[in-house]
Image (cartoon, rainbow, N blue to C red):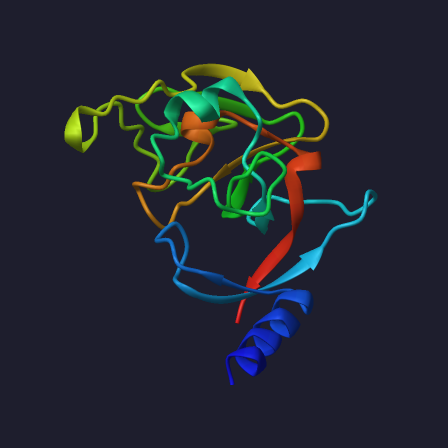
Length: 163
């Protein structure tokens, strides 16, 4: 019986079905569609990606993203929305602005519970080719580009759609 259940889970995984159990996006099932090198990615697209192998991510993670996943750096896959693309001006101060427009639910938190302090990606940045700023505008307390800066296209596994 256990073998059958594991086999069904494997089939779902191979078909691209993923379960989001974090509050960054609505909890539930999503369908992951892999992207190709020429696939254009737009703002407001939901994506699945591996956390960047960047100092800002490691410094601010505080075990929010567990290291028991399939990503090359050992982390679990994250789901976020693209809010900034190539040539966008990203400004992070107490909130996030993209090309001068305030992103909803983008308050930047420095101090959270248990004495943990973040080092956000403060400042003004122009996104270069194949760089993306990702966030959850669904959950104010999401761990996203406010804290680990932009991600690379090579980190993106695919586009996800809520089922």
